[in-house]
Image 1 (spheres, rainbow, N blue to C red):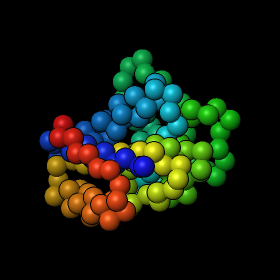
Image 2 (image 1 turned 30 degrees about the horizontal axis):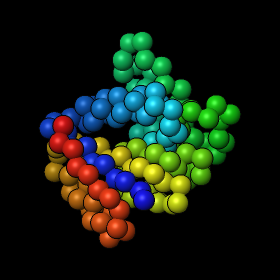
Image 3 (image 1 turned 30 degrees about the vertical axis):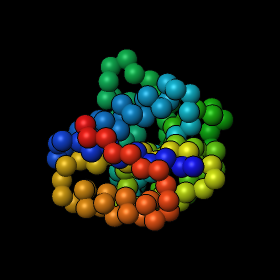
Length: 142
């Protein structure tokens, strides 16, 4: 069964949300899992792509923006829109306002919310959607 984890940050800062996402993505990579980072736009994808190179000195997380071609290195983190390749559906880090498609390959969906009302409201809608799907949901206040 797919598990959904909501990480609710105490800050309203979009930058802190992205920094937290980078730390979480690094942890996923180090655990040996595949991951896809779902974004709303090319600009957001480019922003997280750049930040993954610079968020922490000494960190290395192989990643790229998904352009329809799955890289040969299986652990390369992919960043992009809703067209998630099957091989990267295990763990989805959702930075978008959309609900990712849940398939038999989806093990975990990680939602990162800042404390702004707009972000929390979109998160509540996704939470309700996940509930209707009967998914296991956990909330972590950070």
